[in-house]
Image 1: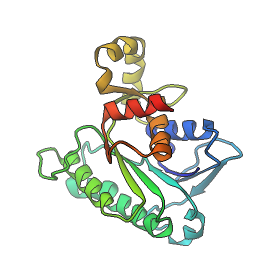
Image 2: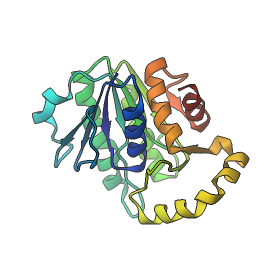
Image 3: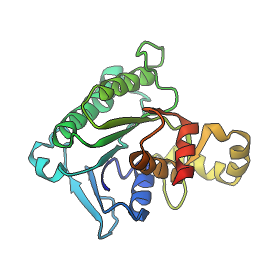
Image 4: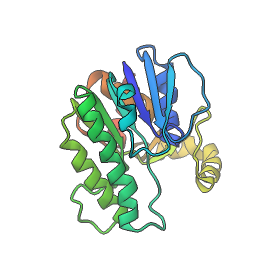
Length: 223
């Protein structure tokens, strides 16, 4: 399996990269982003581009991949719908449209979030924009599109959030995580589970196109 990964420096992206590099059936991983991951591995190659909306000059390097894990995302806090849409919808569809043309047999995995609004009409701005993005991705001519909707993710194995507030929250929750997991297993995943589930859905094809927390955790258990 040859995997392409966008957003490898974010928490979900770090998890996906870790599990991909550990998987014996992943022969190559290409990360695409504005900065390097700082990791070295013989199976890892990094493509650094200052503007991810301008990937045309790198088309030759983006061919020949079986899966794309699209883990890019920003918080909607303090952003207008237009600004959030440029990052969440416009960038995602620009990349996905190119990859669908270059790799029509690819599986495209988009990390969305629990509570995403597929109707695009709800009161929550971020949920509407995410829903609009999901719906547009499903119309692209990939072999398969999977929409991951994780909820709370507990980082493991050195995976960290880029947001200081979230890092502080995770450090407080970590000692209590086994208790929370026992009480609300269908609302919580670990970073390891999310990364493993992304690989497993490409290997075996997922039970559905939209994967909520219980499906994500179940897929991780199969790997």
